[in-house]
Length: 413
Image (tube, rainbow, N blue to C red):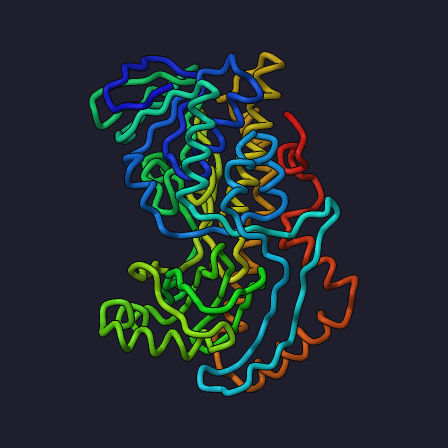
């Protein structure tokens, strides 16, 4: 179904605000499981702008299983890069040698790698086409300006002037969610005083699917493999340093990049303009209100040190879709607190646990304290030598765990 900003839609069962990975995959999941649900997605970003996104994301094995079940993985896989193994080092920027303290990789239970790297534009495009083909109505570019909660409906007012009545409004509008603020949902969290520099680099020699994470005093420097002798970098620095690097002399940026990247893959060349994003922890105190559910970064923003931000959002999608579909099949009110509380209880502990884990890891590794350095290096070495503990870490990186929603197990809702 074609999308354009002048569509007139007056009623829906579920209205989703936000057309990123989370919003689009939720729209597709709902329509795939229950075609009778009227799903409308409102997105402020024009499709052509999304197609220019040069960033990449790590999709864990559980997320891949969901995308396979939703019928879009084959299109995505054509340009995805498997992460075959990962190496973790702990050193200083100027160190000549970077001792390896932890390695993990191999295949998981279904014979697949624990994660793939996928370009955002590729994934967004596939999800958008999948959602449209499944019958979701996409209104873009437009915004949710305001909403009013009623006894049986939420009335949403768009920036274009249209009004849409829905049984449930889903806020998938990012970590600075306007809908969350309009609903009066407060957050707990803090800034790390760090920014993540994101840039793609081309290099002479093949990476062979290896990801590398260097823990440096300013923050982690992650080198994540992409197709065609390229790597996606997530480079954490103090915010003032990051801003100076991306706005300053390109030759100085390249020099500092080479100091951290090293020469193991030969000469490197940045592809495109680097961008910096402020890093912090943001956890919503409530994930739901009557006729409103937060999903993805609107509910939680975490440090990228473990590469789990997107996958945390996919877990929200799978849990919320299952909650909505099962409730609707039973004839229940999908916007009622009785239904939405199931989604909140399902997702709250996992989200808080991941937020706390990334917060601790960042504080533990983003420093040059000799005592902490000794302790963490001993800890990494012990993990590397204990197969059962290492297997647990691989399972976490793959997104596996107990009480997974069906889509993350590769099953239909």
